[in-house]
Each structure stands twice: as structure tokens, then as C-alpha cells.
Length: 247
Ligand code: 6GU
Image (cartoon, rainbow, N blue to C red):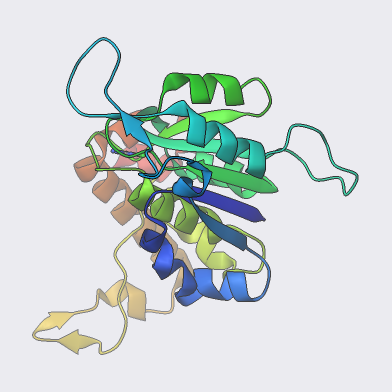
């Protein structure tokens, strides 16, 4: 997968050299480039923002540098090497919620382009113009406000990269995780069996895999009901087994 990121703070993306994302970059699974938006300014001050039309607090990112950046990174015509237009993602608290389902959708794309806004946001015409030639999605991490899109891109890229083929050694960990089945994951334990007077639940040491599966499912249901009643409400009734209904 190819990923381009445009930001006025390229230094924010230094952690993408580390750990499993760094490894995915090193082995070519992830072809990532970070670009400084100011590359596409032409005045001595390298201005990227201005006051909002209609008044109001803060500053808005001017459209010209963004227009040139998107022209450079998403050229309009299909090139002979068969490259496709990217999907443009714009982190914003006004976007659609970022979910595991959206992470799966993005992991299936061949090219993502992230536009990181700062200040109050980017002039709407940048998104409207881009939408005439590529898919554009404004994405929100949740119901709170960040200074800008950079940290959101780190989060989104981490969720997407771990879904790329070959990135996780054990593909089973994708299937068992929280959100894979619409429930939160059950508690996890490792050695020692007893620690500071706290014992690992006996069932997990029983070797009885049917009992272990049942225990994990019950813990998942209890945890989800306590922490995320919205997810219980969204469960498809046909995914519940007889024992779920009884408890
Ligand atoms: Cl994606 N961006 C910003 N600036 N704030 C946010 C967000 C994104 N998601 C939640 N708050």
C-alpha cells in the first residue's frame, strides 16, 4: 500500500520508523512518504492560513497550497504505469467515525492520501474540488477536539497497517481481538499463575477448551454490557447462542 501524508509538522511522523509500522515500511508492505505543506507555498513567509470569511475565532487553511499539494500527489489522469488515484482522508472532528470496519475498508485500498488540517480546518473548496476527481472522506476519532490531524493520522495508520497482509505474524490475533465480533475482548492472563495474591482464573488453566471458550464469551458479554451498552444494542440477534440468551 502507498501512503502520502501532507502536514505543516512532518516531524510528528517520526514514530512511523518504529516497531511493526517501521518494519512494514522497511520490507515494502507500506510505502510511506511525508510531505511538508509549505513546499507548495510561494511567499517569503510560507503562509498557509488566513482569517475565516464570515468571522469567528481562529484561522483557516488557505486553499492554494493544498490545491498544489493534491495536484502533485494525485495527478488527474491515469498514468501509463497504471497508477490509480488515491483515496483522500481528512481527519476532522466533523468527520464520520473511524471504526474497525473503516480500517478494514482502508486496508483494501492501494493508495491513501492524508491531508492534516491545523487551526480551525481547511477551506471547504479544497475538499469539494478534490471530490471531483477522487473519493474524499472526512474522518473523526471520537467526540473530542485535537489541535490538528497529525495524531489522528498516526492512529488511523496504525489500525490500517496491522490489517495489511503479512504485517502480523499471527493472523489469529486479528480474529480474536476486540471489535472483531462486535464484542470487547475478554481479560488476558499469562504466567505466573499466582501474583501478589491474585490467581489466574482456574478455567483458563483447565485445558478444557470448550469451557475456556464459553468463559471468554461470557466475560466478553459482561464487559461489553458494562462498558459499551451501545455495542450490545447493535448485536445481531442471530449471533447470540442459547447460553447467551440464558445469562
Ligand atoms: Cl480526526 N481531528 C481533530 N482535529 N480533532 C479530532 C479528530 C480528528 N477526531 C477527534 N477529534
